[in-house]
Length: 359
Image 1 (cartoon, rainbow, N blue to C red):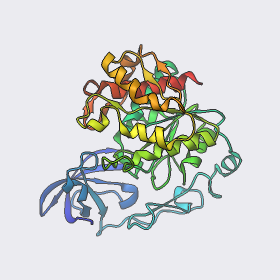
Image 2 (cartoon, rainbow, N blue to C red):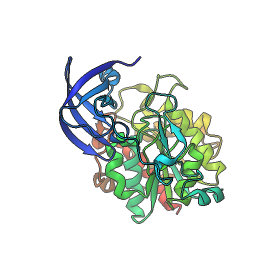
Image 3 (tube, rainbow, N blue to C red):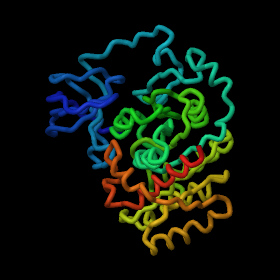
Image 4 (cartoon, rainbow, N blue to C red):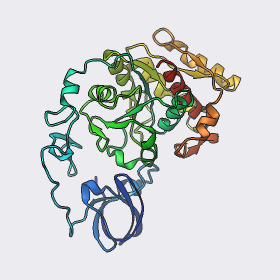
């Protein structure tokens, strides 16, 4: 159920591409709130706003904002539709919800990329790194650019986490270092919009002209603690899509020493399920050298059942520490910084380094 509140904007705080943070006063007191101007218009102090406070009430770390649903007394004007803008499209995302959005799909007839997409059939062997969590993106990118600083990297964002790409401050900070973002499925707000991971991958290769692509869900991760009940299951399907389209899948393993939950320590059960049970196409699952001996032995034992289908290359970690510490955006996963879960980030960087070696 939606938990509703009505309030008044007291102050506009920080802003990044596609989003603005607000202080909103309600009957419950001040609430940290977030608005997406492309959806609701530009909030100003004094505006009355309608809020969805469900995630805030639940205390969710990633989604801990009251979300602005509308500025009811100052609705934005209808967008101009001249036949060439994103609002000229027919891709409906967040479908049949009160805030469904209509975007121009990269392969629609009105798209300037229609001819390219109609002819696109293969990824031409492009390496594609798949990652369970959005927080792996900057670490994978650091590993790629450590060895290939000129490599063009695209990000294909799936809809397992946040739907609006605008929610991610990480993505905003990485924009100068990416060839572009393609939002797929129900996700929206990327530089390009695609209806499926398959078309998103083809757009990354043939429209953004990427040398390497990273596939991961947006911020946030749904998990129930059961074998199949987590959004990262889609990683395995992404591996299959990459293989079907003639790409080279490289799986970033989710490895942790800092997570307090036993199911995520060592090699997370998310990786073992997605790569071991869902992915039917062989992939490279890089493991960095230099991990503590006990951890390395634990990883080898956990990955042994996957060796019949996948390749498990060892990747040298020299230079990856410096690359991670030079990241243009802060590194954080589940609230843990680089040195609080070093194995997680260096493993993601090793996947990036391995992908770069294939170009």
